Length: 320
Image 1: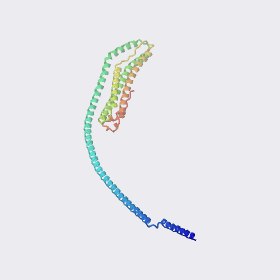
Image 2 (image 1 turned 60 degrees about the vertical axis):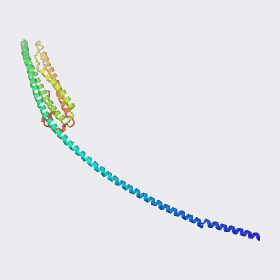
Image 3 (image 1 turned 180 degrees about the horizontal axis):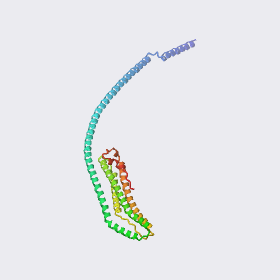
Image 4 (image 1 turned 135 degrees about the vertical axis):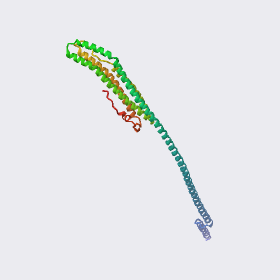
């Protein structure tokens, strides 16, 4: 019985300990509850401070950006005003320089125009002088060989008298008379062609002077003109030489009269062919000068003060 009482006491003690432990586990302990409340309040205070700090930083950043935008706007406005002042000053300077340049060019253009006119007149006078000198030289050569021609004519007639066939005599006489006439006509024609070529070249040179005074690059044109002048001089020399030739049929026998006449004609035609080729070279050289001038950049923008200048690049001259 006594053992049962002790056992009951032990069981009662265990039951009380279990209940006490259970109460402590469910938070009913006042000390632990107070700690939890302190931690909660600290957390709420920290969150409040953090939110305030964030709001403060946001305002500071917002104000900084606003100030920066205002400063940039002010700098842009200052730069714009400075740029406009500089640009306006530059435009005025350019305008003044352009007006001064226009005045200089105008003065130079007037001087250049006067120089070109003077040079054109000088070229025209020189052309006429060369033309007259060439004509006199040709006439002088023909006069120099006049006696020789008459002598050969007499020899030809004397030999022709020995021919029996009258028809052959007439043919031979007609051919002999025509040879010098043909030579004179063709030589005069070639001289006329060269005169026209030289006049065209003078117009090309005048237009080249105007192009140069306008600031265009005419270096290649100058070279072509010089080449054309040299070729024309060679053509005139060939014409002068040909004009001084005389052609008389050299008779051998009556039976070979046909061959003698053919030989004389071939000699004349071959000589004239050489002169024609020289004149054609002169024509090609002048054409090259005109073509080269036409290829100058800006040449078509020049005013055409002279009809001859305007048509110089398209004038065709026949050598036939």
